[in-house]
Length: 301
Image 1 (cartoon, rainbow, N blue to C red):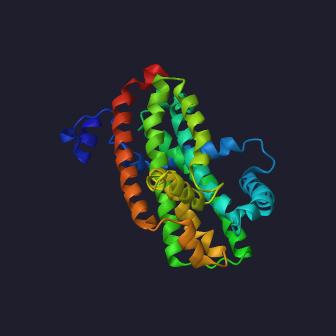
Image 2 (image 1 turned 30 degrees about the vertical axis):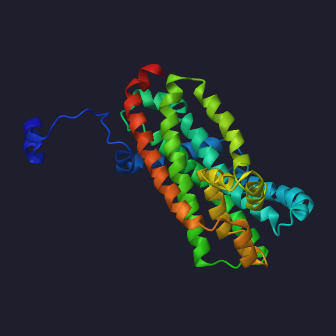
Image 3 (image 1 turned 180 degrees about the vertical axis):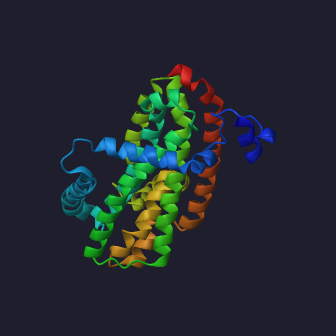
């Protein structure tokens, strides 16, 4: 029987390969069915035993925006002289939350799935990628809330804005996945590394122009030298926040042209594409480091 099967499928000339062999991220998307199972399992586990279930994905961002509107829109926004400052803040928060959630969950993804890692021969890059997709899944309700609020305040979208928002999200998706890969295996070898990552993620919201306008950064450049805004914009998260604000917030204000000149750098687009290229390099580096360290992962778990 085995000989007939071998003849039928011409298995005699097929090379023997390890069941755990991997070609990195490419193999992850070749096994999309496993990726879907991991994503579905993590989403179901997050809402297990919850009466409201997925509704919490909408309730939390809605309450968060209401808080931003009262505190930053009505109280601080007037002092900053920023129209629709709550949207300015919430738009940036959507991107920042996606980034921090992707990196922190990706960092602990191997530890959280150690039973599967030890027992199944699957590409281990699948776990950080699944964490990124789960974070993306929970970002969609925030985008829906943001879109509804923008429509309620007189949103006037344009194709350039949509392109900017798409570029910003792509930038964060690539960077978050890259750092998730880079940190996941490292966290297995050095168990305190996850706490270090979490500490730095707590600092990320303050490094992007959402709780304060980019105009203030330019003002610091006038005091400390023109090089300061350029150094500030080396942060890919800050670039992504500006891009999504270009797509959502600035298209809700009455003085759109003035805000475009005052609240955004002139080279926003060119910097965005340069940052995306740099993030792709980091992704390749993350894959390289992960491939070098993953062989020791099962025994260290």
